[in-house]
Image (cartoon, rainbow, N blue to C red; front, side):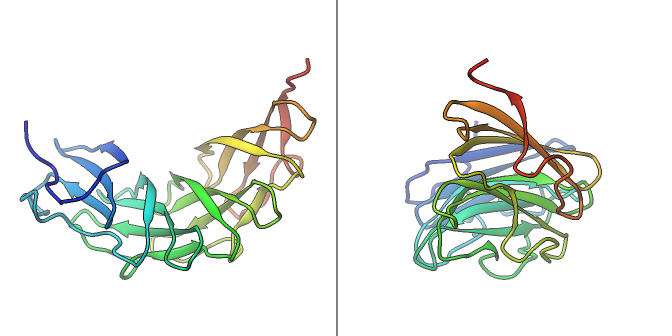
Length: 220
C-alpha cells in the first residue's frame, strides 16, 4: 500500500489508465485543480509534490483522459475560469511535462454551458473530445478533434453530432479506427426514450444521416 496524494483538499473524481512497464496513471480532481501522479522514475514520488495540470481561477472538475500513444495522456475537463462551464484540455507527457501551455487550451469556450466531456484517442497521437452543449438552448452533442500539438482540427467551437430539438443524453463513444468516432446516445426527439447513433469521420463530417440514425425506438 502507498499514498498517492496528501494535498489538503477534497477529492471527488478519479481515473485510472493501466500502462505497460508496470506503472499506471491516476488522476484526482481536487478543489484547487486537477492533480496527476504517474508512478514511474520520471515523476515525483513524494505524495506532497504532485504535478498540477491546471491551477486556473475558479473550479476545474470532471476530468476525462485518454492515452496519447507515447506514455502520456490527453485530459479534458469542465472549466469555470471564464464565468461559465467550458471545456479545456491538456496533454501531459510521460515525463510530466505540460505540452499545451499553462492551464491547458480551450476546446469550446462559448458563452453557453458545455460539460460532461468524453476523451478518446484518435489513434494518431491526438484525441477526439465529445461534450454536451447548450448553445441552442437544449442539451446537444458536439465534438472536437485535437492533434498532438494542441491544434483544433475541426470547426473552432466543435462540430454538431446531434442538434435535434430534444434532450440527448448518456453519450457513449468509441474510435472508428480511421481518425473518427462512432457514438450512441439516449434521444427524446420522438417523445420517448430512443437510442440513436452517428459516425463522424476523421474530417469531422457525419457519415450517417444528420442528427443520427435510430438504433432502438422506445415505443416499439
